[in-house]
Length: 244
Image (cartoon, rainbow, N blue to C red; front, side):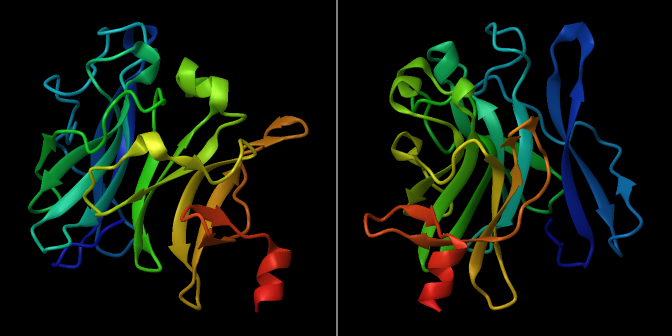
């Protein structure tokens, strides 16, 4: 949740309309000066999927229009703001159109859609709750996708779905999602990288599947590290204790 130079907090959210039985997703904005009282911005949607690059409702038999999960961060060079979005490309096999949507703004209020920062055909029907961060000097894109939303070809090789990570050369991509690897199985979902009080990067995620089905509670922070092969991985509490 970014804070503008004037001190106003900006919270971006997803709104959905179920008209016709299929959800159409749009991104909105609420602002606050104290994180207690919030005011919705009247211009809604703030930004919608642009058919030049993105699939729209009715283009395929995919259930609904995918345009959600905004992740906003400042431009590394100080030139405004960027938004990553769960989106789908307007071409390719229906089960393999998932991309990282992109939008830009100079003031956090007025946004313009841009070309996606990844390519379809990477094996994902959708790449949910994207986030890009630096971990120990390396850039990683984090997103979530369950096995049922993988393309048929990737499902043949993937034992499960969950939280995925792809290494990148830049915060602004392009992201090679085809080389993404799972960080967790489907017991966890919607992973987010944050820093704890010691400044160490940890992952927060919600418990997705348990013994009795969907759980939905947020778990304890999970330490992460780079593996010897160069992939982001979680660290068990036992291993972390031994390391310290």
